[in-house]
Every structure is written in structure tokens, then in C-alpha cells.
Length: 123
Image (cartoon, rainbow, N blue to C red; front, side):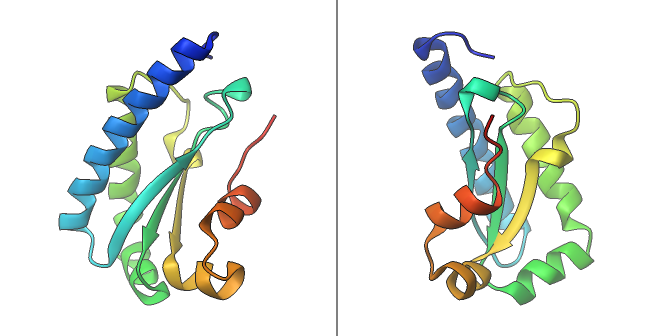
């Protein structure tokens, strides 16, 4: 785990850069994919690191999962983690797939609330 605030900030910048590249790649490869985000508690890093891949609709999310596109999302996440120098035992345990439609229906479109409640792995 990054021990100082400075190391945490450096790790965060590397993660943002690497995940942004993964996001841009996915936009051209995964129909309906919109964006991704990550959540982390550096007190329990890297176990707390979670990446959420977001599709525009539930139908596009289901279509991607039916075509095993989750494997591509895991691969892109693995590449991003490697580029950011983040090591985890099982990348797939850190990858989640969601949709704008589900967030709107279940959380009124409040992504911060949704991520905090559904995906945060706090210590």
C-alpha cells in the first residue's frame, strides 16, 4: 500500500491515466459502453480498488456480458493495473459492470451514492 499521501497521489495519477486509456479503447470496441470509474480506500489498497464499467442501457450491458465482453473489460483493467504498477491477485474481483439505466432507476442517477453503496470495499 502507498504509505504516504505523496505516494497515494502518485498512484492515483497513474491509475487515472491508465484507466483513461482503457476507457478510450473500450469506447471503440464495446457497443453501448460510456465510461468507467474507480473507487479506492488507500488504507486497504490494493484490496479496496474497484473499477466500474458503465454502459448506456441495461440491454447493452446484458448484450456485452452475453458476448463475453466482460473478459475484454477484465483484460483492459489488467493492462491498466500493470501500467499503473498496481498488483492484485485476481483482477476480475475488482471489475464490475453497470448501466446508466440501473443507476437512474435504483439511485436516481446519483453515481456517488451508487458506487459508495454497491462497490466500495472499505477497511
